[in-house]
Image 1 (cartoon, one colour):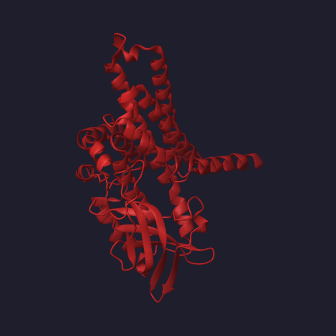
Image 2: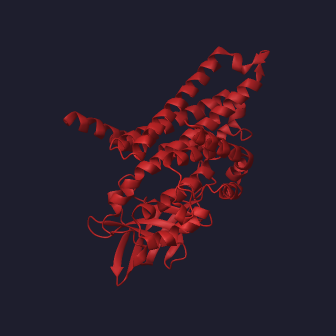
Image 3: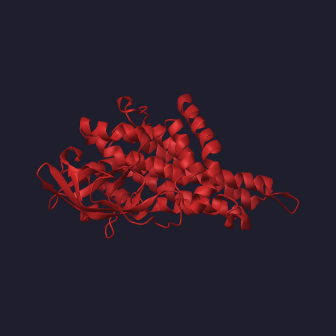
Length: 375
């Protein structure tokens, strides 16, 4: 990694350590929005990282986004999730939206004044997006949306919601819905095992009327647009998992170096050293696969889709394993909220589930393997 990226990593790590980590336990315990972290991220201009400078961003590439998510997640998984969901929620607008729509949505999100989210999951639809029932019907120059989206991260905090809705028997559109639009309401705050500082609720659309300018390009091609963004969003979720794993690992190393049993540091026990070595290998191998996938995405290589699925799978599975072992290395203290590894273990579990479960990632990977065999 070149000096520029390393300097950037160091700056985000310092920010996360000094201004995000001290509030992480309180955010988790009170299940509240990570306000202190968000203020720190805004001051560092990180919400605008992926956007063009003309839209108020800093034109950062995907690797810089991955690094930022890693370092923030190592301190607080919820804070990293708020950040990356903002980017995901505006991704289709940036890639396919009109100049007018980009100007309407992006600048406030880039500055951190407003939040964003994307709405795909429904009460009976998760992995199979083609089965969504939320519908959009054109009425004059407007579109009217009806349906219910479930487990929407950043709701109701976010101002903007990228809603995937059915516009025909086999057609889907992406609609930019504003929190204040008529017919938009929200379900109760979800009580979650982890990521408790990330606001999550249903988004309910009851005859929500959206002006035509808020449709992202072709209202029949939304499914393709969303699928096109999954490579990047899965890379960011992989980075989040990797960051939590690194945070848990660092906590375990520090604890075992300081804690003494039988007259010596825990770090001198051979079995514990073996666990730490295995954890280090899991983190570094996952990071290597993720960064390789990021490179493929960045150059438009068709192998990116399967490789980012591999990265999301390996980063999240390895992170779950590392977090469990980190808690184990803390002994009984790891089972208390006095140490952050307990929170990290709860937080990291969702990375194996959202943005396509790891079972779905395995299907994507296998499909690519067999496609190559046919050729």
